Length: 309
Image (tube, rainbow, N blue to C red):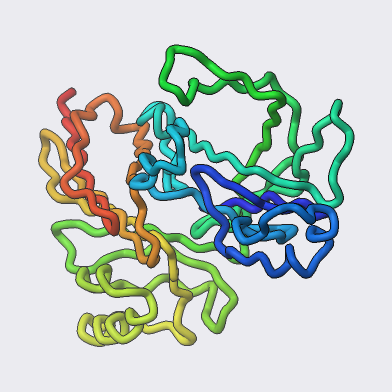
């Protein structure tokens, strides 16, 4: 997840702790109005002078970097966990020093950036509200002493997840079971050269390990082998950044077990994986859930249920 904290008037992004801009270029600073207002500033050390720079969180291995200077809660690589899972990883902090263009000479009022935007890999359409003044935030003293430092002013910006339109939705979930050779995909609706009203085609289990763009051949071969109907035109594919497979491992009179596999198809690795499972009817017999495998590209969970509970 990346952040765009746009300033319409422009600014000089001089120094950052815990984050970095994607593009480091002082050309706009030297050839623009920044050089007129800040003639004594060394522009060779600035990040850039863009009005809408993209800022990304540093990876965890940079948390102990000397330039960070013990900045608390920094360097999460843009991945945040719920407070119930890990409170220390539920927030990410970075500091940025900005020289406004033109300089703001009002020393009694601070105006924060107004146009915030989240540039995410999986959720690029989030909506951001305007900054709202809140109680000044407090931070641990970077010296390591048991003391807190208060901010001069604090604002809160709310980011809301947006839902896709009903006519153009993707479903990234598939279902399989030990008693069936086929994998059932949820229907996906899209408008890009496909049939949004056709049912998803059944796939062989090994097709789940193949990227979406290479599944058509396997789906057609499987349909011919099993004598399944092939819709024309073909149904829409999911093409999801992250896919989820729910597999029924066993089913007995005393209970069942299921395996949930979450696979990342993006080039960007996720440092922290977690999943929230909601099964209201099965809660009375829920026994336990444990992680079978967790890597940067895949998360495998096992869920056990006891029907006698």
